[in-house]
Image (cartoon, rainbow, N blue to C red):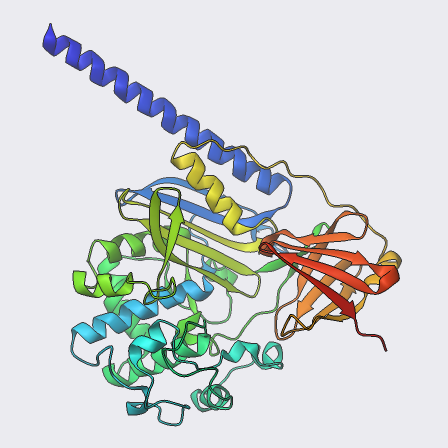
Length: 443
């Protein structure tokens, strides 16, 4: 009787878990169906538990013009998630004795300002003081063209140091471009070979590699921005520019597999992993911490052209979530939070999407101009394309805006709201809990 009771109890428990899992999958499906139906994004998601994929969903198009839909094998530019790969390669080279965290930048590139004070660890942890080359005013022009190693190094070394090494944290893609070259120098191998030997082969990744020009024949997605009801292809950064800071192509499945391999010490040892997740100013070596209520994850986010990506691993739960998009309207952070709420069984209400307000192109003219504020280091240019308002910060990419009420526009993908006061030539900018009043620069 006891044995029978135990078997019945196990059966009931298994049935209950199965129902809960099915309910979670249905709710996840409902979330991504809404995103697709309301044209709030295009991309692919994968969720792993215990090293196995338990949920996958693709939505939207990899190639809008040719009506090629995203699928589980579609590959996306992952932007700055590349830094997690680059940092892992550097840590492996350190294990092999080819350099150390204390090695000085001056041993490799003495032409960089303060190179005799900057260590490999400073570069990995964004504490070097080297300015971020993507902040250059003409970046959006030359980033579309092939850059030689010398040209890129000249751009990186042309600016003055932002601060003394290790004084503070300041995110800079320049750090990881330099790490790319250092990895190649100390190993006498190109980065693609290092990526293959250190990560791709040990982790059995089938859809990850150093990217080049986007090619639909290789199941690579183009990226888009949404203008009114249409997806318009975004500009394409030449991959000679970001290097190890953002030139890797992958898919959601491979990102989860990479994180799983990394945290199970299949690539680097425990000491290296501990260093990677040891935080200073909330950033480790190529990884940062992602708190979600009582759950702690580690990973990275990425963005390049119209692509955005998130990839996080939660060690205690042995689960990971990776989301890659090639067309962003609804903020990725909100999608990931929604998915985590559903996965962990927390209360979560599906977003109530609505279509934006359509405005005639002539009505947008009163908003056009350049806006600035003494409290902000950059200016914002407001232009239009057909009947869509466009905002572009100095040295940044263009972002389409949707009208949500009278004189109020938003870009959900970056949590940006602009409240115009056209009669006063002003706009109130709200983003990530911060508010700034900006004035139009009059001709």
